[in-house]
Length: 260
Image (tube, rainbow, N blue to C red; front, side):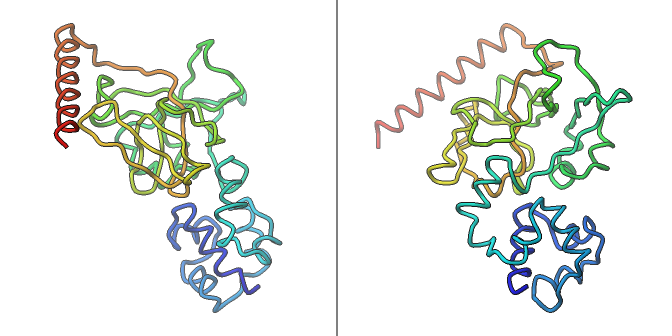
């Protein structure tokens, strides 16, 4: 049982949970989580079973393996491929058909915390789309984006997404919705460096925003963008001004590089 405390702490942090949030999910009080992590107390078998089920990992691995030292190979690799430590909650209709969950802007902050909580997901709006492009065998979600970093796609647009379980299938330059602890919900073009550096590069379509990186362990979910629904129709003049603006910014960047 000597590894159990560090393992619980590692697993909890890998999901971005506080001690109180983990305690609530497995049915104990926050002080008990602290005592487990500090090796002041050992979890009962029933609690070990709850922890094992919640993190989708065997009790044997929880007790005997140094999971925090395996994060760069076994555990993290399983997480990236969608085989371990990933929980996705969905809602079905009366015929047991999966519905599409809508995450509006006002629910974005809550989603970062409650993305794996069935009760939170059930409270969000749900609907179905009778489109041949959407498979009945896959999970879809709609996220309303906020901000101008991906213009010409406007703030307030709803992005239709497909759940991506295996992050090694992120294709460079394609657009995705990414959920992370510090950034929340972001809509970006991604560049996959997971197998090289363990990171994902995020790039905006709006050249005013610089690219940045996130480590894979900081990411909760990745959703592949398929299309969008918008109630902000572009005007012809807006399109021309936007193109001209981007051209000027591009020329400015090129000139700055030449000066250097």
